[in-house]
Length: 525
Image (cartoon, rainbow, N blue to C red):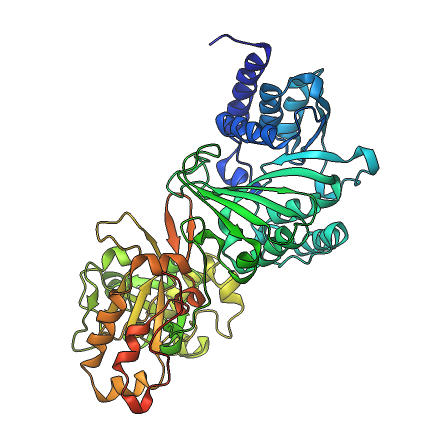
């Protein structure tokens, strides 16, 4: 391929990018959400943008998180310089920004080394008609409270929306940019697809439906991670900065490339307004509200307990014996799903799981003075925990006694919290019948039966096997639709999502006198 001035410059940019990335700790880049956009993807995005723009429309381009300039480089590759009237990029991190300034000197790109979220909003003709950005993927817990409040106020001023406190920084970038765009301006955002399903994404979705015209969301195959150094399932969100017209439909696509997706479908805005999970599309035609029974009708579903430090609070059988810890201070706990080979766990005469990998949860019921007086070996272990800073961790320091655990009694049924669809079992999630006295950590969801099933299980001990069989007959796709997916094809279910999984077959276990649920459900198949 013939090397043009711009391909030469892109090659130089890639060398610079690689050098900068390798010179920065991965943990620091993860914390700051710095994941470089691959060249091919940047070019595909700009080609798509070119097709959406008028053939002679002059471009005022902005990238609020420019990095080393992947999107500007791609813009130069697809548009002649004569069509680019101005180009501005913001970069808060001088580590990337200063080399980018040097690289693009004299090339028509105005790089501003400052925080875009604090920058002055342009007026009138200074606004931009093309915004392309891969914003920083900084999780909410890395945004300190004062900063979060400032960002919320700026978003409200920009577009009149209130963002959930659990939203990541990329959500603030997207909504803050509203006031920077011309009327009808085109925006393309390369963001994590999780906003499409999670609760904090509701305000982002309202913005996309109410404030702008959402054109297209392309979601990459979750098994094809776009950023090799981040476990993120990515989507490209396209919209124009103007309200949508009545009857507007949004294009959803999945897999393949932006220009040649494997699946696509147009979904009416009125359907999207009623659906909390947009990752159903384009594989689903629509989504009807669930009218029939769901798992939440039959079970209270809770996530397994969070210990504060599993390595300290969860001990092996061998560790317990070696340290001579009192069994009254311990409770059996299920090991990670990979150490539970079968979907049924039996208990021994003490109720401990009959498993090769046996674990116990430290949960002493006594005060520190009682432990120091009566159980010197346990006291020594607690002192070791203090010396390691365990007692000062967030969960521990907010407990009445730093070493006591939240209440999670054994549940007869547990479901794995994370899973992949390409497992040997063919199911991303497993329902395990727990016949032991073991509780579970937060790698499981715990299902506690409600009445009338609860009373029936107490009277008919063999009924739990029928319930367990029904749970395992739930189709994987039905569960996947209620959950969420991350990069690499990793699926996750939260308690409320599992509770929303349709379960019409469980109604058949109820006597007619107790039958209070519809015989058929209204969920889409």
